[in-house]
Amino acid sequence: MNASIDAKRTVAELKELRSLTSDENGAQRVAFTETWLRARAWLRAKLEGLPVEIHVDEAGNLWTTLKGRSERALLIGGHMDSVPNGGWLDGCLNVLAGVGILRRISAQFGGEPPVTIRLVDWADEEGARFGKSLFGSSACSGTLDMDEARALRDRDGVRLPDALKAIGVDFEGVKKCGRELKNAAAYLELHIEQGPVLLDLGLPLGAVLGTFGVERHAITFRGQAAHSGSTPMNRRRDAFLAAARMGPEIYRIAEREGGVCTIGSCTTKPGIVTSVVEECRITLDQRHLDGAALARMLLAAREAAGRFAGEGNVSVSWERIWQIDPVLFDTGLIALCEESIRETCGSVHRLPSGPLHDAAEVARAGVPTVMMFVQSLHGISHNKIEDTREEHLELCVRAFDGLATRAMDWISGGR
Ligand SMILES: [Zn+2]
Image 1: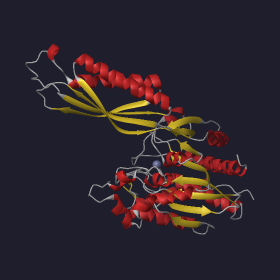
Image 2: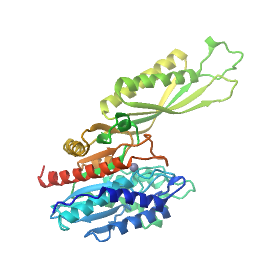
Image 3: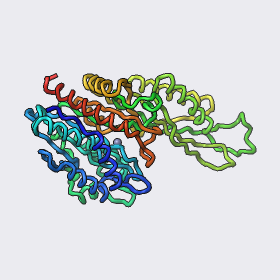
């Protein structure tokens, strides 16, 4: 029997989840809260009746396993958690499409497919409460910085290890869940794009090449405070002027290299209306899919900052806030993803992901990985107005199911 996926049912379940876990301000499935636990209990109820094994691992990730004839496993992932006042699709679309695929494959193969199929609901992807995203997946991949995570506190001063204890998770043991990846042969994740690229192209679906590398720095220019009335313009050592010239410069750098650059913050000292700025601190966030291009963007920004400082007779210093290398997805799986999208809706676009996703962590752990994006109306996410056309939701579920079939064959074929 060749069963087909019931995409309309997935859309109906997304609406059901929305009515259960959202209020007038949007989705409220913040990790480790009452509402998140309710969403997970609802998810478990949806899996009832399937011949699957369900357990929570050491980091709080929820695994659902449909055992196949081979132990080699196809992993499908997503996250039930949301930011506060979040959208209705971010994360749970991935999980519920996975539930639909489990049902379809179980029906088609009489409960025993050729390879094992596992659905994972990652714990605290968003990092909304403790300011650290990808908690469950980075514990699983082994990249979680334990010292940094141990010291995290929420707004009320509650430590992450204590919040975890409340849901039965022992912080010091979270990395043990890495063994879940033992037989992982491929990892697939469907996600709403969260940007306007597919919308602007008029395409419903895209194959994701990888996630951007990020360089995040604070740049501080130091000059001299001076009276705003008595200091002639040619005698000033104006820290703000040098910093402000970085504004247009980063647009030129981003355009030249094809990446994105953002100055997200600017603070001045003494910060009063009657003084030339003595000290100006800006933050710079640069992202690119190509590591060499990212390095060139950083170098160009450093050169420009040095030049502007010299011309303005001020000094400049840099401090790295955070950095991550680009994560490239598997070329074989990207090709299968494109094939499936083309079969479902005719045309396909390849694009990088600006935001990080759990998929990046799984790829970093060495598991061949790919993501599929569905168009985001308004190009907006992490907001209650996040939306996708219903026909596009159905298309993405069908295309993602087609990708799962191809990935199973790919695994069975020993690729
Ligand atoms: Zn997400």
